[in-house]
Length: 488
Image 1 (cartoon, rainbow, N blue to C red):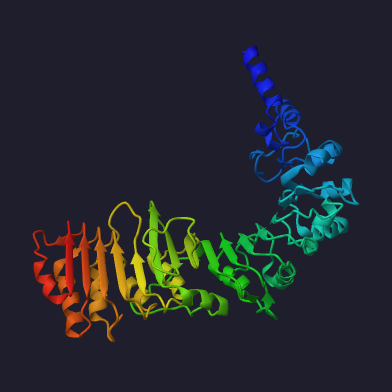
Image 2 (spheres, rainbow, N blue to C red):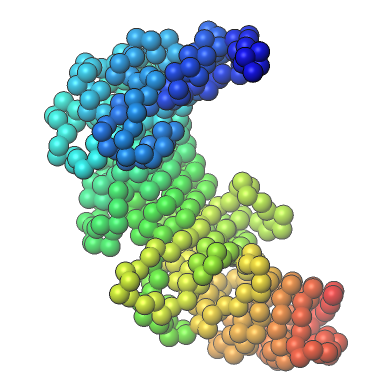
């Protein structure tokens, strides 16, 4: 065993590229070996843990215990030792605290000539509030980068903030292209000042708001509208994740985004409706934002899907500039919106199907230019749209030419299209049913009604689909459609 340990140590000491990531919260023996082994030239990815409190919230890399043991190294007691490693770091994760500010009231005077990515967190002791912060600490947090660095790291391109607002001195960093606003970084009643700071970063092309509000308190209260437009002139991608759809639009409302090419709404939190809706009722007004409308107006293909975990639904909508049958995760999209449902108080019983709430939410966006609609649930068994969902869903579109359904029951969908007055989708020419199931008569009625209205479906594609009753002969369908393709 001792020979094996010695071999590992020799390998580590002669291979600095093995220790490009160093966590100062590691046990002393491991940390000492890492610091000895990382050489003097290899760029580092450095994690510096906070000064421990007696009790604290869970902290990444340190576990979730109520009492934290003293990390091997912290800025509070080991700043001189850490300085040369910080100066070599291309990635740095660091935590600001009241205690650290009191130890170094004039700043840390760090040097970061190689620094490209900075994760900056402000950590308060459990139970404390912003009002408990000393005036000195409050001032240092407002200009946190100036507190950290003696000279601005000119290579810094990516900044991720958690627990503190966007530092006002980010305007001293002309190379910043990426900013993430994490938890507890925004106030609903004071958005304007934060957005104004962001507007003064000339190279900003990627901006993410990741759960920026501390909680749901006040999320549904009325908030005064923004007083003036805020231009993010060079922003190309805007991302919202883990927040209420209403809060996302609250942030979006004052923004002018002339160069944005993609908006992502990730894991948007939506509430289940408390009252059942009439089949044709669409309760929510559409969201109007000129740059959002510009993006959705470019969309030709819309993919709707959902997965389930137990009784929970996780729906998603993806808008593309052109039909892309082989689109996969990570490929570009004009709009990518996924949703989760926040829990209602136990005293309420939701009377609305989650997919109805999903349809209500995407109705607020405008998809009038969509020509191809794909509804492809990724559930393990066949999905059925709840009553009323097709009516509300199809009220969104006006230019549809291709309708593709997969892993769905088609009866209520085709009945909606057959019976609607005036005729829905007058230019619909292609119907694709893959791994679907339904009554043969409802499909016949749909195709016949379209022909009667001189809007004959040109291509009907049935692949791996089940037609009921068992033994139903699809051959007669051919007389009501331009081309019928049936592939078992």
